Length: 285
Image (cartoon, rainbow, N blue to C red; front, side, top):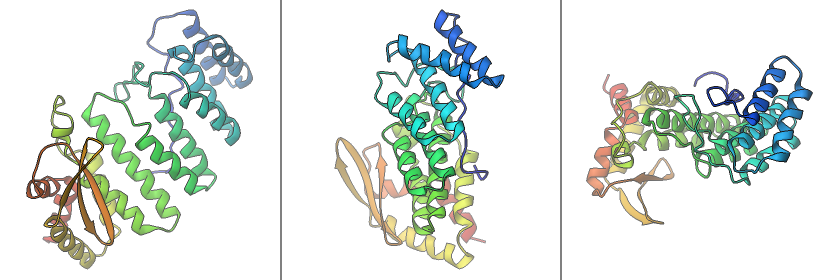
């Protein structure tokens, strides 16, 4: 995740592994043509599906995503946005199956939003890129049945925000989004049917990247402020959700909490996060 910001999310080969219906074959033909450099012919295959299929079918979703990708790769913002809106306003099911184990669902809307973010980012329109990242992270959330995959995606979204805020010369917001993600670790309560996750490399990388922005003295001050903030946590319910609210470095944090806990128990959850444990390790040397 420390690599290039503007990651291209490839799902153009999503048809592999499914039964060979006529529509699947037409999608695959388009993919073969595209990979052979015959992009105009590939586009005809996918647009034929879009004209003939209901907008709720997997074949339609594949064709729409492939068409969006073509215009995305061309750098054509207007056309990419047209097919983004087509996907967003369709009746597609984001939980259509996908053979990729790390990405088990099609996630049409999430991927479309991230392509828009990538395209605007490459054009240095960082505010607009941030808009689409936030949509992908909230309204078009990443569908998965794997806790590891869920954590990876959420950390990835935090890295996107971090880098875009940094590009906007707003390091305080860049730090805020990383701390906010790093403390959001009530996974056992959030997903009681999923296996508990051990500290992952993604969360460690997030913590390391964040703390590289601080001097040794600033890290000590951050931990002191964090410890103080955790003694002043307030719990609030809104829209059937619960939040832990506290002030830190001039920002108000609203971290989702998925269990019935006291403020003290909530502080314990935060202190068991990879982020806090890494901060504790760095400040104890």
